[in-house]
Length: 182
Image (tube, rainbow, N blue to C red; front, top):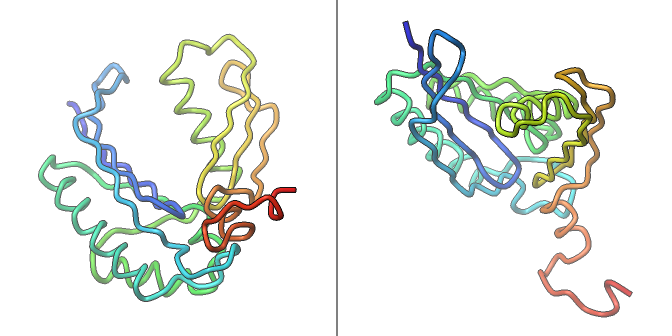
């Protein structure tokens, strides 16, 4: 019997939902996909110390929408959170509040696990299983590097070098000037 899964990626800048139907032979087909820009790190100056009430409200709204889509597809929900939640001092309060208001359980994953999942996604999307590859995922709060061969991870690392984090740190007013880059 086929199964539907709704995977939710709770990132520093955006949340992603992908709903797939998994067939008995193991292959899958995407049936729905949604992205919402949430900006969990809004208000921080680079490192994410606290997730604000405003960001929490945006997160709740998006996750209620995602839950509605998942329920419409009769899909089991699996949600993971990455850099912003992983590093925030109020992550447990955030996770509890999300569950209370949406009934979505969130697993906070390590940077290395995030990289492993990206690597698995690359292997499923591109015919490169028998090749040694370097997979790089540049997120809002971190960047993951994985070197893999035939599904085996040879090297994995996660660095606090995300696009949003670096922009806030070096260009807090979103203006690039010669003095800031020179």
